[in-house]
Image 1 (cartoon, rainbow, N blue to C red):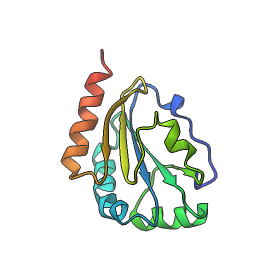
Image 2 (tube, helix red, strand yellow):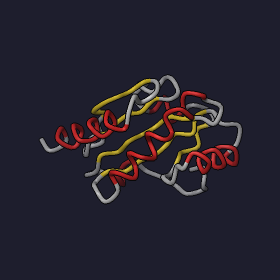
Image 3 (cartoon, rainbow, N blue to C red):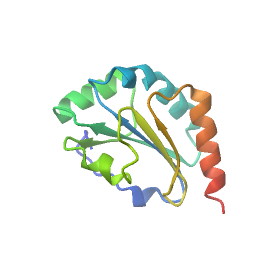
Image 4 (cartoon, rainbow, N blue to C red):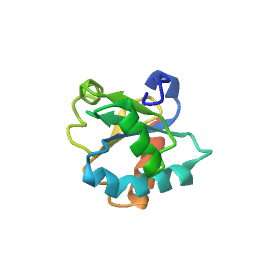
Length: 134
């Protein structure tokens, strides 16, 4: 991660995971950052985890500084080469992109571009949780 820790999606099984692809140089990412922070704050304590993919950033330090400025308190994977984004089944092809994984780790929803609202994100998380129950 940009903080030097490791993060493994397998450790998140049983939870809904919001995966957001972002970069410090991405204007639309800055626009959606407040929505992500608000949704993160509103889902605390639920079986929901957030993780970022810091996409094609020049350095971990740059990503870490930008994430702090935007209020990202969740881990972000450092993806200088773009490989992590490709590993998301080729679905996260633009920044920003947000994938919602169900409790089994399957992509339940995908938003390419800016998430339109906190409500939209919360509804996608809720639907993914319901999908993962079956």
